[in-house]
Image (cartoon, rainbow, N blue to C red; front, top):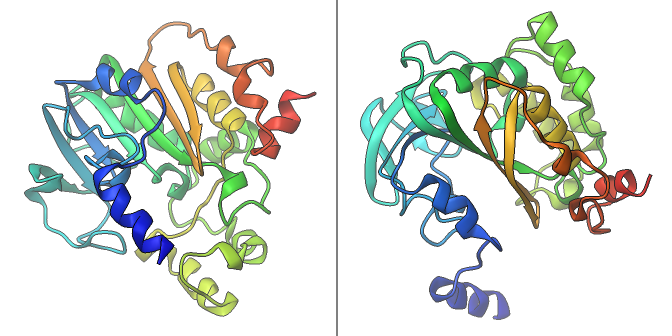
Length: 277
């Protein structure tokens, strides 16, 4: 009963990310592309309602049939809050059909962790964004998801994957995912054998979280990849990062310092422990 009342209340008074305007104002009236969407978080009733403020938005999904969107078709079919953009059916690590520097911004919500070679993907995503363009990522914070028993992926590992040319068929983390999954936190219910089947069919469903993030690993990763961090927030299981594409030296010391209040919230122990060192 209480859950139903909460849902009804949130229909009229949705929860929002504190400081959401500082994200939205950067993207207002611009044209962009979203990887793996559309996302409820960016919808009119979401935590960060971006869709209502942008001028236009195209989308990229890896297949004509996905777990999240069902059956979709390439063309002017990308439906974000009732508005339509162009839907590309492409693996996001290869956007060669899109010209360089086409878009003002790029969105990615809970899709980046599903990519086996994040550095390679990010290089391609940056390519289609204009000079000084913006990138808004929402990543799952490892501490608040079913991945919380897994180690946080370190920068050296991301670099190694890129240097080895790891592809999306990679199975390196599959046994770790299965063995360290918190089954009590899985949406719905799933057995270990069912999860194993799902994970080893990843090339078709892209369900696996190849990598895990906390605030520090995310900010360190994007700093290494020459993105200027503008805003970083954490809410529930989500890390929100607004960044600017840069061709020069970035200055991200504010977000990399253990003194930043982001690292002093004991609700996120992996970041808290790092900030206390």
